[in-house]
Amino acid sequence: MREVVVREGKGNKDRVTVLPENLITPLQRQLEKTQAPHDADLAQGLGLVYLPNALAVKYPNAARAWGWQYVFPSSAAVTTC
Image (cartoon, rainbow, N blue to C red; front, top):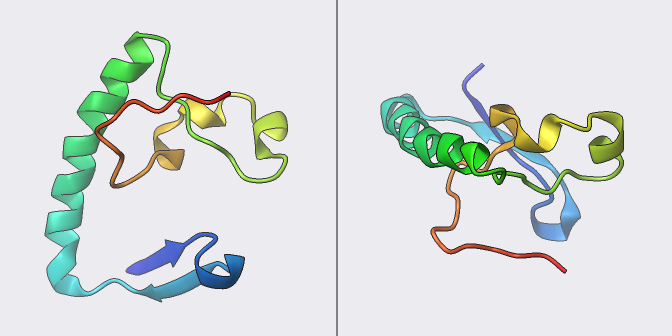
């Protein structure tokens, strides 16, 4: 559908915008680049992301699923309390 969904943006609102044609290939490359470290994290028992609202309870394995991962993840390790 060539759309970008921004979750919990300004004003804590979700927004949908158009994905320009000239960004599709670079975005696909970024996703490929991001998936390798995610797979390595999963192998180490890591790779979880925060899920909004009660989704973590409803879908207990979704936090590790590729579809929920960040497109531009931090290179620094993040720990939670």
